[in-house]
Length: 151
Ligand code: HEC
Image (cartoon, rainbow, N blue to C red; front, side, top):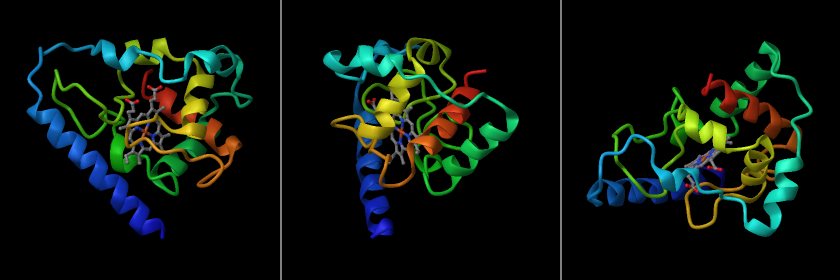
Protein backbone atom coordinates (compact mmCIF):
# COMPACT_ATOMS: atom_id res chain seq x y z
CA UNK A 1 0.00 0.00 0.00
CA UNK A 2 2.63 2.45 1.15
CA UNK A 3 4.86 1.42 -1.76
CA UNK A 4 2.18 1.86 -4.42
CA UNK A 5 1.26 5.30 -3.10
CA UNK A 6 4.91 6.26 -3.22
CA UNK A 7 5.25 4.96 -6.77
CA UNK A 8 2.19 6.94 -7.81
CA UNK A 9 3.43 10.23 -6.45
CA UNK A 10 6.86 9.63 -7.90
CA UNK A 11 5.22 9.15 -11.30
CA UNK A 12 3.30 12.41 -10.90
CA UNK A 13 6.41 14.30 -9.86
CA UNK A 14 8.46 12.86 -12.72
CA UNK A 15 5.71 13.87 -15.15
CA UNK A 16 5.90 17.36 -13.68
CA UNK A 17 9.64 17.34 -14.12
CA UNK A 18 9.40 16.40 -17.80
CA UNK A 19 6.75 19.06 -18.44
CA UNK A 20 8.91 21.54 -16.61
CA UNK A 21 11.81 20.81 -18.90
CA UNK A 22 9.66 21.44 -21.94
CA UNK A 23 8.41 24.83 -20.80
CA UNK A 24 10.22 27.72 -22.38
CA UNK A 25 10.94 30.39 -19.85
CA UNK A 26 13.26 33.13 -18.73
CA UNK A 27 16.22 32.04 -16.63
CA UNK A 28 15.31 33.87 -13.44
CA UNK A 29 16.89 32.78 -10.18
CA UNK A 30 13.83 33.57 -8.05
CA UNK A 31 10.58 32.29 -9.49
CA UNK A 32 7.77 34.63 -8.31
CA UNK A 33 5.31 31.76 -8.73
CA UNK A 34 7.04 29.99 -5.85
CA UNK A 35 6.47 32.93 -3.50
CA UNK A 36 2.69 33.07 -3.98
CA UNK A 37 0.93 31.77 -0.85
CA UNK A 38 -0.24 28.15 -1.02
CA UNK A 39 -2.72 28.50 1.86
CA UNK A 40 -6.15 29.72 0.67
CA UNK A 41 -6.86 33.39 1.47
CA UNK A 42 -9.68 32.58 3.90
CA UNK A 43 -7.39 30.38 6.04
CA UNK A 44 -4.04 32.12 5.82
CA UNK A 45 -4.42 34.48 8.80
CA UNK A 46 -5.22 31.58 11.06
CA UNK A 47 -2.40 29.43 9.63
CA UNK A 48 0.11 32.24 10.10
CA UNK A 49 -0.82 32.46 13.79
CA UNK A 50 0.29 28.86 14.49
CA UNK A 51 3.63 28.93 16.27
CA UNK A 52 6.13 26.08 16.40
CA UNK A 53 6.09 24.95 20.07
CA UNK A 54 9.52 23.32 19.70
CA UNK A 55 12.77 25.29 19.85
CA UNK A 56 15.30 24.88 17.00
CA UNK A 57 17.69 22.88 19.17
CA UNK A 58 20.16 20.53 17.49
CA UNK A 59 18.29 17.60 19.00
CA UNK A 60 14.91 18.70 17.60
CA UNK A 61 16.41 19.42 14.16
CA UNK A 62 17.91 15.91 14.16
CA UNK A 63 14.47 14.45 14.95
CA UNK A 64 13.06 16.31 11.95
CA UNK A 65 15.90 15.12 9.76
CA UNK A 66 15.17 11.50 10.69
CA UNK A 67 11.54 11.93 9.55
CA UNK A 68 12.64 13.76 6.37
CA UNK A 69 14.78 10.76 5.41
CA UNK A 70 12.56 8.12 7.01
CA UNK A 71 8.81 7.75 7.21
CA UNK A 72 8.15 11.17 5.67
CA UNK A 73 10.21 10.25 2.56
CA UNK A 74 10.50 14.01 1.85
CA UNK A 75 14.01 13.29 0.56
CA UNK A 76 12.62 11.48 -2.51
CA UNK A 77 11.34 14.79 -3.89
CA UNK A 78 13.12 17.53 -1.96
CA UNK A 79 16.56 15.82 -2.15
CA UNK A 80 19.27 15.38 0.50
CA UNK A 81 20.44 18.96 0.10
CA UNK A 82 16.86 20.36 0.22
CA UNK A 83 17.13 21.86 -3.24
CA UNK A 84 14.44 19.63 -4.77
CA UNK A 85 14.75 17.32 -7.76
CA UNK A 86 15.33 20.24 -10.10
CA UNK A 87 18.51 22.18 -9.99
CA UNK A 88 18.21 24.15 -13.20
CA UNK A 89 17.53 27.86 -13.16
CA UNK A 90 14.38 29.05 -14.85
CA UNK A 91 12.39 25.87 -14.45
CA UNK A 92 8.85 26.90 -13.59
CA UNK A 93 5.78 24.95 -12.54
CA UNK A 94 4.83 22.73 -9.65
CA UNK A 95 8.22 21.26 -8.87
CA UNK A 96 9.36 20.20 -5.39
CA UNK A 97 10.28 23.27 -3.41
CA UNK A 98 13.91 24.29 -3.10
CA UNK A 99 14.28 24.87 0.65
CA UNK A 100 17.60 26.70 0.22
CA UNK A 101 15.74 29.55 -1.53
CA UNK A 102 16.08 32.33 1.04
CA UNK A 103 13.33 34.48 -0.50
CA UNK A 104 10.91 31.55 -0.23
CA UNK A 105 11.98 30.91 3.37
CA UNK A 106 11.36 34.58 4.20
CA UNK A 107 7.95 34.60 2.47
CA UNK A 108 6.51 31.78 4.60
CA UNK A 109 5.40 31.68 8.23
CA UNK A 110 5.95 28.38 10.07
CA UNK A 111 2.18 27.94 10.31
CA UNK A 112 1.86 27.99 6.51
CA UNK A 113 4.30 25.07 6.34
CA UNK A 114 2.25 23.18 8.91
CA UNK A 115 -0.89 23.89 6.90
CA UNK A 116 0.77 22.35 3.83
CA UNK A 117 1.76 19.24 5.79
CA UNK A 118 -1.85 18.92 6.96
CA UNK A 119 -3.53 19.65 3.62
CA UNK A 120 -1.03 19.17 0.84
CA UNK A 121 -0.73 21.64 -2.04
CA UNK A 122 -3.67 21.16 -4.35
CA UNK A 123 -2.89 20.24 -7.94
CA UNK A 124 0.70 19.25 -7.14
CA UNK A 125 2.59 16.15 -6.03
CA UNK A 126 2.87 17.63 -2.51
CA UNK A 127 0.57 15.35 -0.51
CA UNK A 128 -0.75 15.75 3.02
CA UNK A 129 1.15 13.91 5.73
CA UNK A 130 -0.62 14.85 8.99
CA UNK A 131 -2.12 12.81 10.59
CA UNK A 132 -1.85 9.84 8.19
CA UNK A 133 1.94 9.51 7.94
CA UNK A 134 3.04 11.36 11.09
CA UNK A 135 1.67 13.47 13.92
CA UNK A 136 1.46 17.25 14.17
CA UNK A 137 4.29 17.20 16.73
CA UNK A 138 6.48 15.34 14.26
CA UNK A 139 5.49 17.84 11.56
CA UNK A 140 6.83 20.69 13.70
CA UNK A 141 10.14 18.83 13.98
CA UNK A 142 10.32 18.34 10.18
CA UNK A 143 9.62 22.06 9.80
CA UNK A 144 12.63 22.83 12.00
CA UNK A 145 14.71 20.72 9.62
CA UNK A 146 13.19 22.42 6.53
CA UNK A 147 14.09 25.80 8.09
CA UNK A 148 17.68 24.65 8.66
CA UNK A 149 18.22 24.54 4.87
CA UNK A 150 17.62 28.31 4.74
CA UNK A 151 20.34 29.14 7.25
C1 HEC B 1 6.18 13.21 -4.30
C2 HEC B 1 7.02 14.36 -4.14
C3 HEC B 1 7.04 15.07 -2.79
C4 HEC B 1 7.24 14.53 -1.54
C5 HEC B 1 7.45 13.08 -1.15
C6 HEC B 1 7.23 15.64 -0.63
N1 HEC B 1 7.03 16.81 -1.30
FE1 HEC B 1 6.96 18.67 -0.51
N2 HEC B 1 6.57 19.45 -2.32
C7 HEC B 1 6.47 18.75 -3.50
C8 HEC B 1 6.08 19.64 -4.56
C9 HEC B 1 5.86 19.28 -6.01
C10 HEC B 1 5.95 20.92 -3.98
C11 HEC B 1 5.53 22.21 -4.65
C12 HEC B 1 4.06 22.46 -4.41
C13 HEC B 1 3.62 23.81 -4.87
O1 HEC B 1 4.32 24.46 -5.65
O2 HEC B 1 2.54 24.26 -4.43
C14 HEC B 1 6.27 20.76 -2.58
C15 HEC B 1 6.24 21.80 -1.68
C16 HEC B 1 6.56 21.69 -0.34
C17 HEC B 1 6.59 22.77 0.59
C18 HEC B 1 6.36 24.23 0.24
C19 HEC B 1 4.93 24.68 0.24
C20 HEC B 1 4.87 26.18 0.15
O3 HEC B 1 4.20 26.78 0.98
O4 HEC B 1 5.51 26.77 -0.72
C21 HEC B 1 6.97 22.27 1.79
C22 HEC B 1 7.15 23.01 3.10
C23 HEC B 1 7.14 20.85 1.61
N3 HEC B 1 6.89 20.53 0.30
C24 HEC B 1 7.53 20.00 2.62
C25 HEC B 1 7.63 18.62 2.45
C26 HEC B 1 7.95 17.72 3.53
C27 HEC B 1 8.32 18.15 4.95
C28 HEC B 1 7.88 16.45 3.02
C29 HEC B 1 8.03 15.16 3.75
C30 HEC B 1 7.18 15.00 4.91
C31 HEC B 1 7.55 16.58 1.61
N4 HEC B 1 7.41 17.90 1.31
C32 HEC B 1 7.40 15.52 0.74
C33 HEC B 1 6.70 17.40 -3.66
C34 HEC B 1 6.91 16.51 -2.63
